[in-house]
Amino acid sequence: MRGRILIVDDDSAMCRMVETALQRRVFAATSSTSAEAALALLHGAEHDVVVTDLNMRGMGGIEFCGRVTAARPDVPVIVITAFGSLETAVQAIRAGAYDFLTKPVDVEALVLTLDRAVAYRSLRAEVRRLREQVDRVTAPGCMIGESAPMRQLFDVVARAAPSEASVLIVGETGTGKELVARALHDGSRRAKGPFVAVNCAALPEALVESELFGHVRGAFTDARSSRPGLFQQANGGTLFLDEVGELPPAMQPKLLRVLQEQRVRPVGSDVDVAVDIRLLAATHRDLETDAEEGRFRQDLFYRINVVQIIVPALRARGSDVLRLAQSFVTAAALRAGKKVAGISTAAAQKLLAYPWPGNVRELENTIERAVMLTDYEQLTVEDLPPKVQAHEPLHVIVAAGAPDEFVPLAEVERRYILSVLESAGGNRTTAARILGLDRKTLYRKLQQYGS
Image (cartoon, rainbow, N blue to C red; front, side, top):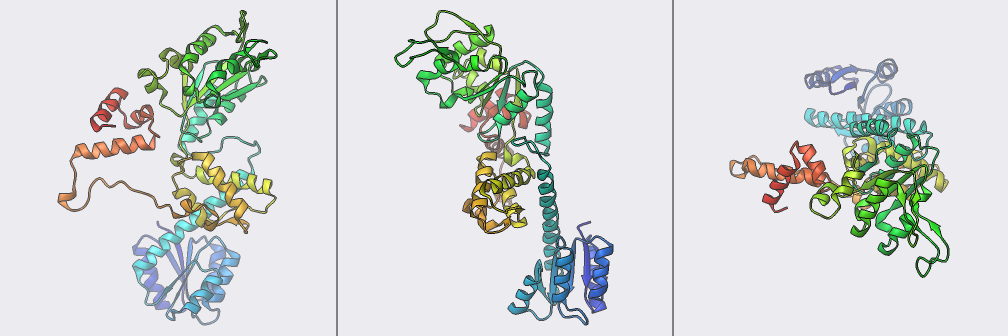
C-alpha cells in the first residue's frame, strides 16, 4: 500500500473516478462528498493525505483545508480546483495546503504528488519521534544512533569494555572515535581512574617523548622542574592516543617497550617508573597497510590492535543524521539562549541527502551555525550552509540504455571497487572487508588500475 488517501469533493462522480484510479495504483483510497463529513472521518480513522476540491457546497475547500491543518497538522492537504489562478493558489497555501493542482485531474501527476506527500508525512513523523527521543537522553556527549552500523558498534564496545586488551579504534576524521574511547573507559574496571587523551598529531616531534614519558629537572634547557608524562598521569586508568599513526618513527619502538613492560623512563632519568594503564588508540589511516609497507612498525601495530573497532562514517548511518542533528539543536539553542526546538521537514530532507565528508563534527558545526542564524523555532533550509542546500546526490552510471554505451564487466568491477574504496575513506582494509576480498587481492586489483 502506497498510502491512505481521503478524497473530498461534492461531485460524487469525480470522487468515484479518483478513488478508483488511486485504488488501481495501490493506494487505500476513500471518499466523501461533504467537507463536514470528511472532518468526522479524519477523527475516526488514520489517513496519510487529504485531497480536496476547492469549490464545494457548504464548507469550501479553503476553509476545510484550514480546519484540517489546524486539527491534524501532520496530514498534508492537496487542493484541486477547476479555477486555477495565482490568487487561489496563494489562498490554499496560506490555509496550509501541501500542494495545489488544477482540473482536469492528471492522474499520474496526482499520484506523483501523493507519493511526495506520503513521504513528507513520514519524514515529519520521524523528525517528531527523534525530537522526543533526544529529549529523553540525559547523558551529555553520549553516543547517539539506532542504525545497524551503530548497533553493531555498541555491541562490540559493550563486549570489549570490561577487557584489559588494547583497542585500536578506526574511522574517518570527525566520526567520534574519542567518544568510543570514553565509552570503553566508562564500561571498564578502570572507570573510576583517570582518562587521559592526547592527539599525537598535535604534539611537536621534539616534545613527544617528554609529553608521553615525562622528564626530570635539568633534562633539557627549559626543564626547570620535573614533570610526569601522560603515562604517569593515566596511572590506574586509561591512556587514549588519538591519531597514533602520526607518531614519529623514532618514538614507536620506545612506545612498544613501555606497553610491553608497563614501565616508563622519564627523559633525563636513569630510573624506570612502573605504570598501570590500559591503552586505547585511534587512527583515520589504514594502519595495517602502513605497517605492511614500512610506514609504521608492524610489532607496534599488532600490540595496539588486539581488538579493532571500526566507527562508521556518518553517511553510512541513515536517519542517525537526524537524531544527532536534533541533539545538536537542543544543545546549541541552550548555549545561545534561543527558542529553537527542532528542524523543519524540508531542512531534514537536505540533511539526509548531504554526504557529510566531515562526519559528525561537520554536522555539529552546521547545526550550531544554523541555530545562530535562524529567526524561527525550527531550522529551515535557508538556515543551512549553501553547500548543504545545493547538494544533489550523485549516482555513478556504469551502463546506459544504448548497446554501444554498455561497458565490459571488468570495467563495471573497476568502477565499483573504486567507488567502495572512496566510500571507505581510502581505507583499503575496510574496503576489502566490504567487497568480500582478501586484502592482497584488492591490492593487486588496485595496482592494475594504477591506484
